[in-house]
Image (cartoon, rainbow, N blue to C red; front, side):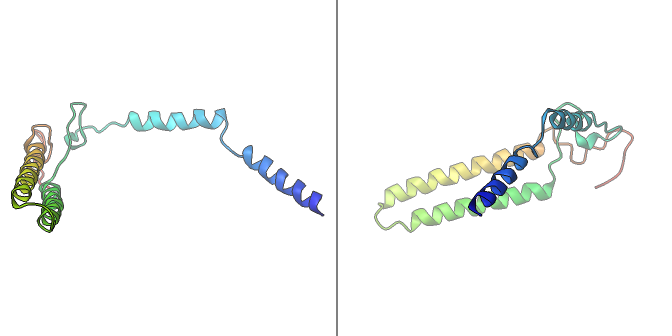
Amino acid sequence: MKTIFTLLVTMAMFSTTFAQYGPQGQRDRGKDDDVYASRDYRGNDRHGNGYGGYVFTPRERDMQITQINREYEFRIRSVMNKPFMGRFQKSRLINNLEAQRNEEIARVIGKFRSPKNKFGDFGKRDRKQW
C-alpha cells in the first residue's frame, strides 16, 4: 500500500514539473510585449508622445502633499514625545524635519508645474476640458 501511494505521489510531482511553460510558451509571451509596446495614441497628447510627458492632476498633487504632511507631523510628534532628549536636540531635529518636509512639498509642486506635465495641455486643435 505504501509503495502504491509513494508511486502516485511521485507521478503527480513528475507530471506537475512538465506542466510549466516551455520555450514555446516563452516565445508567445514575447509577442504580447511587442503589441503593447507598439500601441499608437493618435491625436491624444495626454498619453505621452515620446518626450517623457505625464499627467499629474491637482488632486494627485494635493493628495501627495497631504500624505507628506501627515508623515512629517507623525515624525515631529514622535520627536516631541521623547522624554530623554534635550530641548535643543528636539528643536534641531524638528527644524530638520520641517526643512525636509518643505523640500518634498517643493518637489511635488515642481513636478506639477513642470512643462512635462500634460494636465490641461490639449494641443492646438483639441479644446476639451477635463
